[in-house]
Length: 76
Image (tube, rainbow, N blue to C red; front, side, top):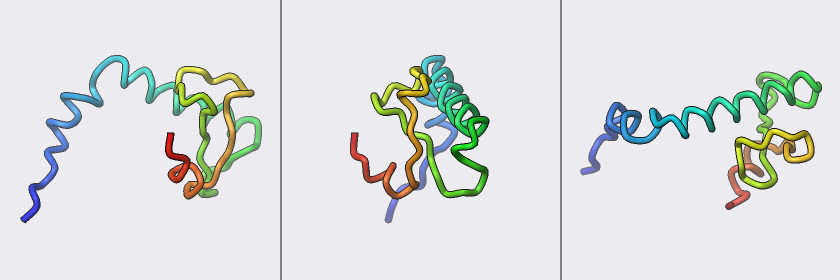
């Protein structure tokens, strides 16, 4: 029998940390910037990837659009 995930504990011990909040906000900003450029749209199945895997680096040259499948396969 598998143990159920404790989402509240997970949030409190990882997702709530200031550095994780900052990284998440920066990833959201990258998506917004790319959408404003017209490179992605809501519901298009695309994701914005950071070439250098640093979500805090939102330079245009560091952002690329990938399919969800390709981004998840990337294997950083």
